[in-house]
Length: 414
Image (cartoon, rainbow, N blue to C red; front, side, top):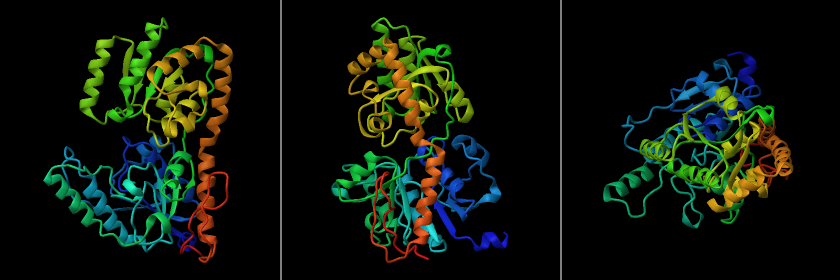
């Protein structure tokens, strides 16, 4: 390492593990490194033995190993068939805390992590927020069952104890960054403030002639019950029953094998107009999506919806639930539905109205610019610079996208 690098401020970016099956937070983690490694001495703190070439392709980054450090922490070996993310997350938090004080700034790439020192937390959802506005097991992807078995309750009690909480009030002492205005406003109702930085969506815009695109629908995402894929198939079935000749192509990795089996059974029953394409990444995914005119998104409680932006940038017209992050991202009344019947009606109307279709395409093209890599990079650099440059006595400042300030500035003053 040269002297210039030694003189740089040090930043630790914490991510318990990286996975192509999770999506948005992993893309955010990679782009946090990309955005900051030219200005600061960046270390990724993780447990993953991840393939940098794969995650560059997955996230659209162009990182080289010499641009940042990796500190890999060891967790307990556990069977992949047994979900133990609560315990593993608690152990990661406990282990990561031993390294946090060695950085000038700590950034946690997914939800909350009690590092024992002031930190910035990029919030991917509000699942970690318990009833009454209390943070619960912030490092875990598992929900604690209220009436689980005795063994399960003991397991969660052990996980809670393993966290060894520092006593810091993360929700009010640290800097919180929401991935959508919907997440920020949901937190605001519990008295928690955060700024908003939309996640980066690395898809380059696709300029493909509309007339050469398929008139079919594409669905993209993890094949998981929360994505409500059956509803997308049902909507297309409704369109076919209304006399519209169309198919649906399903793109994504299978997270739940039982759910995948049920979708395969449903597809076989429906006929060859339901096509399972498997997982696609990077340029292959971008090129495939650009073949289609239309898309359907069916998760109703999406905190952000990165796949919606990918579809917009691919030149597709996505239809989505009028709720949570998806309603915020798409933000056009002609494309948002509250139930299957309304979805069929709105899609049918747009398909029969060339003027509306053209207007919507222009709207989506302009809107997709909000989610550019450049916007994310500039927002992150501005945030980090402000934390290093402002004096420690600066008062608490919180903001939305259109206001200045980036949260509590704590102990980051120079």
